[in-house]
Length: 82
Image (cartoon, rainbow, N blue to C red; front, side, top):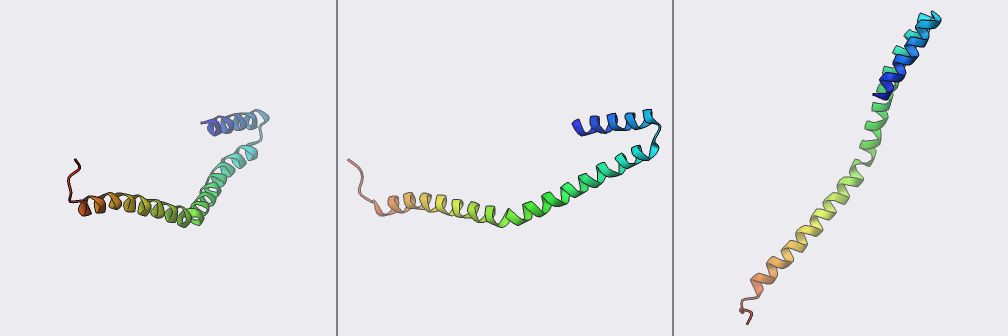
């Protein structure tokens, strides 16, 4: 939203000065930097995806072993608590 306002101000200033090349430059640079930012984000996410996936799997495995420890205890404990 802020970027759209900044582009509108820049293009209105370019129109006020009468320089259509500047307005055209703005409309070419905004999508260029948006695509560049998207590419950088995808590379950054794919670089760290394996690390976060491994930590998530490790956490899930620890939680499942925690749950199984209670199940094993109830199987072995056949005497009622009195």
